[in-house]
Amino acid sequence: MASLIEPRVLKGFRDFLPAAEIERRDIVECIEAVFRAFGFAPIDTPALEYTEILLGKGGGETEKQVYRFNDSGGRDVALRFDLTVPFARFAAEHRSELTFPFKRYHIAKVWRGENTQRGRYREFTQCDFDCIGTSSAASDFETLLIMKEALDAAGAGGITIRLNHRGLFNRFLQRIDAGAKSVEILRAVDKLAKIGRDEVLKLLSGELDGKRADSILRYVETTGSWDETLDAMTAVAGGDNPDSQRLRTLRGFMFETGIEDTFVIDPAITRGLDYYTGIVFETLLNDMPSIGSVCSGGRYDNLGGLYCKEALSGVGSSIGLDRLIAAMQATGKTATRETYAELALICVDEGQGGLYQRIAQRFRAGGIPTLVFLEAKKQGAQFAQAEKKGIRWALIPPSASETEADGAPGGLVTLRDLRTRQNSAGLSVNAAIDFLKKTKKNETGTRTGTPD
Image (cartoon, rainbow, N blue to C red; front, side, top):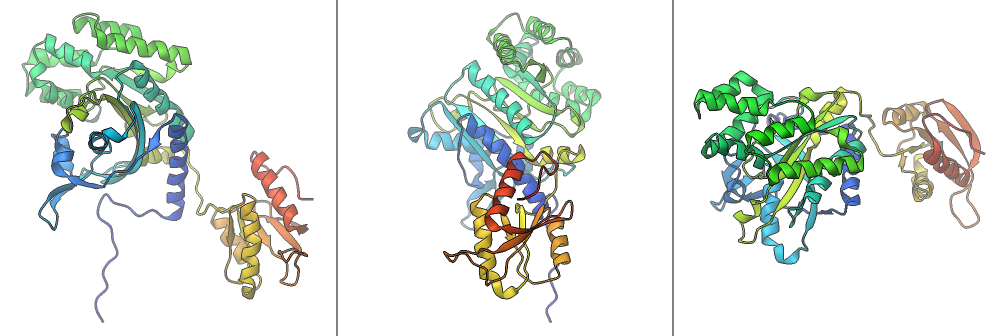
């Protein structure tokens, strides 16, 4: 007999059992509903792209992490490491078919060969949304507002969105004659929260003299109120300018919509990718900031220029689904269930499978997802299995001889509340459906009545 292959998955990759996948899909549905509510449309792109497409502007640390290989045709290809670069290629390739400003969202897996840790994997899901074809402050603000509403809808709890402007930071670097090293400086500063001040200072000192390296750290460590911090940043960047004015405009929008407490200006937020040119932002969960940003992004006015001569100014953000879920699980903000079904139809006679499915169809038509048990095990065992799956209600069906005049399944059923262990016997199918519909609509955690 041939030896068995050991079942296993690669490091940083995962299987998802039903409870985990339902949890993920519930959160994705909440996020997607917000994207749609703001008028964003879904798109999709290939998981595999030509390497030159993906690395044309990523470079640096990204190039070290990309899954890259030659395919069977000898082509140099790679798995996408994010959804923004493929979107830039998509927008350039289909620009004649799109109406601008174009608002898109894309929820899909990406791959990076990086070190694994809590909430960080080599295969993970991003929930991206972008608006391209406009450079307005209104599009920047709409992005920030969607971030807040999407995370609120997902049940993330209190959040803080930390905001900066790459243009303002670049003006400061030009003032201290460090603009030529801006890419290396931005990547070093982006690691501040991960490796600490001393290590970042070492990285900066490898690119600049000690005086300029120290001045950069003082800049990113500027503290105070929003206005105090922005005034200090603006002063060392050479005075008032369009970039600082953009931040002031966004702050005004925040007050107009009453969400100003969610946002903090933070000169240390730079984002490591080269393509950002305007505002940049990261989002921390107030109950678990140590897990890092769960939603980040910024404005990338020049990204589309890699693939077409036409300028495609854009702004967007990405929610890291896996990190968000890891944080929500750690803080008790998620619930576990193994099925979407709300009702389990108990199997009394395996020969009546057709009748049971006919009954279940009536409940499903009434908006009650129904799972039909297929084997006539002891009722107690079926009740226990339904509870394990997270199903609240069980239905004991009528006999095969009980039908209504039109041939539809009729007779009397018993509805069992698996939480309270209470039975309601002698119900018509319609009465049971009506009761469950009312309970689904009105229940706030405790049972509000019994079926008629």
